[in-house]
Image 1 (cartoon, rainbow, N blue to C red):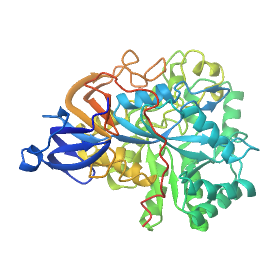
Image 2 (image 1 turned 45 degrees about the vertical axis):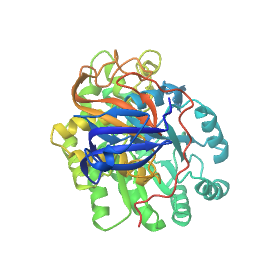
Image 3 (image 1 turned 30 degrees about the vertical axis):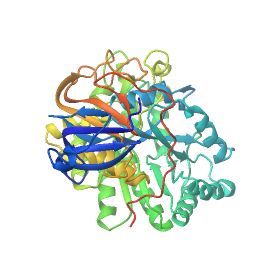
Image 4 (image 1 turned 90 degrees about the vertical axis):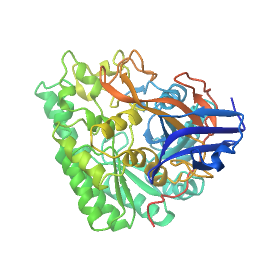
Length: 468
């Protein structure tokens, strides 16, 4: 239901910048004003609809800068498509996703982008944008990068991992980075030394170490740190900004911190799985560890403190999910007897906002930092701010009414992601999304889904806004 004028009254409005008891006026899908609750200005607003947010938080819709809907990997596809995945995102208070279009080796970037537009078109219940995965850096694709930036695809992801699939060598990476240095785009890097990891995989399997926990053991933290270091130096040589995705290891955080201390335009994200889960999960019996196989892998628990510290000190700027779910039955099971054949990826798009709110209660981050990590900085990083990521006049009316007192237990029984297990089964958390507006339209109404496939719009992006 679109109401031309809506007022959200009585909540504590939290943005990355401040917290105020304010009412929010929405007209035709945009925020037109905010005013102190009870003020004559706010009292004078007439609207067709009033949402009572008394005792609740009013926060910007989440921006998840790293999802993989309908994504090909290991001979199968991630189990959420754009319809189920964006619906689950909405349930979790995320109103914008930035997904990854994939260039296939030997094919044009444009061809991959068109395929992703076709996958997402008329499917999404929240807004979406795309990054581009470069699998084949050559003269033709380098030229295409410039055209994509002009069209609002302003970030390009490369892989130092997965030889034979997505892998780029240092020369290809340098060429692409030189291109982004010239066209204003942002280079995103999966930083793991895939060539060395493949040797360790081969040796582990030959020695009969086939269980899921060996996935974590062979993808060593030092090989993440080494690749992170190498990516930073290549970016320095190219004069390009760098965004390192899914940082999981203390040693990799240290590389980012060193670069940032030099004033380099180097950024890092981490994901909830690295903050809340560990190699203990990978060791779960009866092949249960397969549920937690993702790359970079889960680390021993002692790495978590360094990640939380990095989020507080701004050595890590963003928490995204890397949502890439595969069902345990029939998909994760492809790797029984050979951990290297387990599809890499975990479900998470629905739980990011809630888990980070729990982190506020646990004392890891402040409320404003929660919004900064989950909404404002990803919007700035990927050229969507202030349309997304904040609540100010002119912003899209992507608004979440959040109940900070509600208690919930995360479970496969209650989640909305199209996957047959929960990575957080039985975890009790405090805080829950109550109502979600996407561009002023109600998508979740007091814990009932009222959205629809096709409401979500493709959103072209500007350049990274953290490079002033």
